[in-house]
Length: 88
Image (cartoon, rainbow, N blue to C red; front, side, top):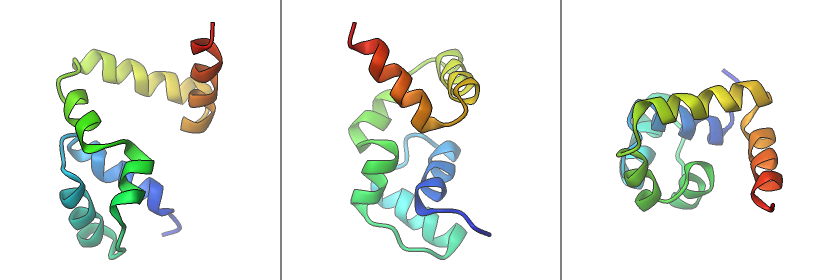
């Protein structure tokens, strides 16, 4: 399997967006056999505090976000589009 650490972390967080950083690191280790650090978790999926607030986000909003990323092609492209739109 050729998957980068960032994708591993994102896949684990998709299982449960409210995992703590420690839980994410443990889950990546158990699922992929790769050790990741807290900085990698934060850079990939945001801080623990942000993720906990996302857990209270309605499911339809999360689905719309996933659809937006899919339409844009990938996460980085979606982020760039949002950055441009947010400056107006």
